[in-house]
Amino acid sequence: MIKKFKNIDSKQFAKETRWLLEEKYSNKQSKKFLADVARLEKGEPVDYVIEFTSFLGCHIDLSFFPLIPRTETEFWVERAIAQLQKKRKNKKIQCLDLFSGSGCIGIALLSHISQATVDFSDIQTSCLQQIKKNIKKNFVGVNKERANIYKSDCFDNIPAKQYDYIFANPPYIAHARKQVVQKSVIKWEPHDALFTSDQGLYYIKKTIKESALFLKTGGSLFIEFDSHQKKAVEKLVPQKIYTSTFWKDQFEKWRIVVLNPRRNNLPNFIPSLSGRI
Ligand SMILES: C[S@@+](CC[C@H](N)C(=O)[O-])C[C@H]1O[C@@H](n2cnc3c(N)ncnc32)[C@H](O)[C@@H]1O
Image 1 (cartoon, rainbow, N blue to C red):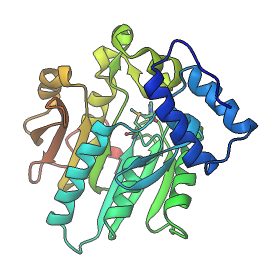
Image 2 (tube, helix red, strand yellow):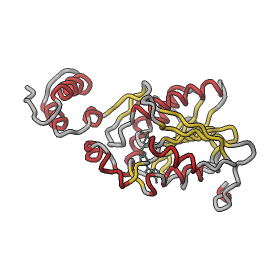
Image 3 (spheres, protein in one colour):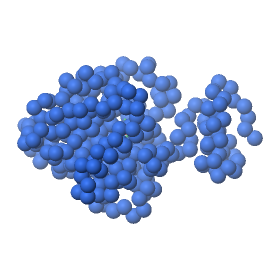
C-alpha cells in the first residue's frame, strides 16, 4: 500500500513509516495513515506527524507544533533533576520553567520530583495550550498547587515571588546563523523559538539580569546556550552576584550555565527592577 518515494533516505523513511503505523495507527493502514506518510515524504519531522515525543520518560504531545524537545536538553535536565533530588530531599521545591514551549522541562520536573511545583510560561498562546494538554496527559488531576501556566514575555507577567530553581532554554540562535541551521528545522519548526538578536544572546542576557529578582539565595538558574557562545556567556555573568558552573552535553559540547547566587547579594541589585518585589 505504501508507494516508493524519491529524494529521501529510504532506510530512515521506512523506519519512520513503520513507527508511525505502530504508534499512531495501531498497525492498521488507512487513508489517514497514507496522508501522514505523504507528510513524512515532504520532510516533515516524524515527531510532528506522530504528534508526540518522549522526554525523560514523559509523553510530550506536539499537536500544537511547539519546538521539538532536543536530546541535548533531555541530557542536562536529567542531570539537574538528579542534583535537585540529592540536594533537597523531601523539601518543597518551587520551580519556574521559563520559555516552556511544549512544557517538556517542567513536565519532567513534576514527574520525577514529587515535592516540586512548577510555574510554566511562554509568550505563545499555542504553547500555553500545548503545556495544558501535556499536564493533563501526564498527570491526571494535577492541581493548581503543583502546576500553573503564565503567558509572559520573559519575566513580565511572572508572579512576584522567588523560586528555588529557574530553568531557561531561550531562543539563542543568531539571525545571522540561519544558514548553518538544518534546512528541515528552518522549514518546519517555529522560528521565534530558535532565533534572536544580539548574536543570539538577547534572551540569555535578559534572563541572567532579571532572574536575580526571582531566585532565592541557595537556588540555581540553569540556562541552555549554543556551545560557541560559552566565552560570551562567561562574560555576561555578574561575578559579584553569582558563582557559575558550565556543563557539557552528551556530545562533549558546552551547553549549560548554572548560576548560583552568592549569599546576601539578592534580590535588590537591579534598581530599575527592584520595585517589582
Ligand atoms: C528554544 S524553545 C524551548 C522550548 C522548551 N523549553 C524546550 O526545551 O524544548 C524557546 C521557547 O521560548 C518561547 N519564547 C520566545 N520568545 C519569548 C519571550 N519573549 N518570552 C517568553 N517566551 C518566549 C518560544 O515560544 C519557545 O517556546
